[in-house]
Length: 399
Ligand SMILES: Cc1ncc(COP(=O)(O)O)c(C=O)c1O
Image (cartoon, rainbow, N blue to C red; front, side):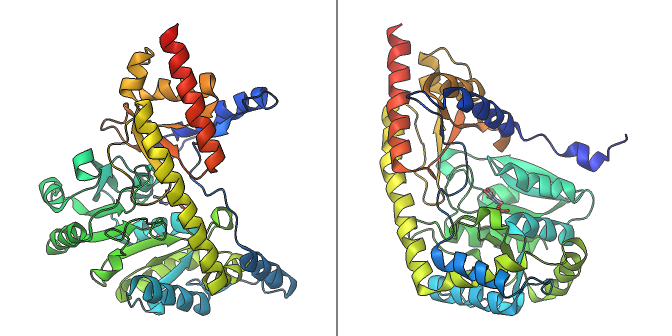
């Protein structure tokens, strides 16, 4: 069968190979004293809080399960608008908010609405692999611009200016980022947006981890900069609703009917039950629970990062958000005769029964030296992982 060039351009998700191997090994070691610990998974270990669960059950019982309008329930758009006002002090009119099937659908809609065949989008290297694939799926070309620890693994205005060509359509950033958990400083983001707008380009910011910020210097939405910035968000991370497939995007007024038309045709609407459930996310009781969980994520970060550093798995920039640690495994690996982060991830899985993600999927700039740990696992799991990694290193060095 002839496969489209578009589909062929989408690279395989190498991480899935690690995940598959981890699941196979996990079954073998399930009943030993060292069952597999999964630090490779980028989703919260919490589920939706009680009010959200009850709202979903109520919607099902009441038969509120028909399609909604393509832009989503008005009440939910208003609640999200209220969240921007109360939490971030930014006025985002509900009419500019479009509810989607997760950030994934939001990214897809934004790319399809704005990218012509051959257009180039600038993304930082490393970055979340699917983001470059959304660009490819719209027949655009993702141009990965290498970043360094000194740059917090983010693009700067100077870099965007230097990388801009006549084919460039805009930037696709993520702040806080996956895999690094680092954000762009608000002033730098403002300067990036200036560079982009001067050239008639688009600034697309994936803010899926916005709610999970631990540093007041960074926890601001890009929507505060200008109403032309496009922001992507989701109920997956801060709101702990990964499998409910619900997110949103905020677009300039002129783009609302365009995105609406695309959404009508491609998805009809996001899950109605999930939309009714999500209304309860913004109740004071739910927000209090989310904030308690955010404090737990921060506590995990505060404990885990120094432990990795002490093991020789240096985390060059302390993440200010999300739940990841982007660690340089080269010196740890060198001691054990391991050549790169891909092999390191497999060895950690086999020797310590700790599943982590090698850097490879996230780009090519130094990614062979880096692995991503997810701190979306319990503190007990993080502590046990550190003990096992330490024991593995000690045994290998002694041998
Ligand atoms: C940076 C980033 N963007 C988008 C997504 C997709 O999330 P969703 O579950 O909302 O589709 C993820 C998921 O891990 C992510 O890390």
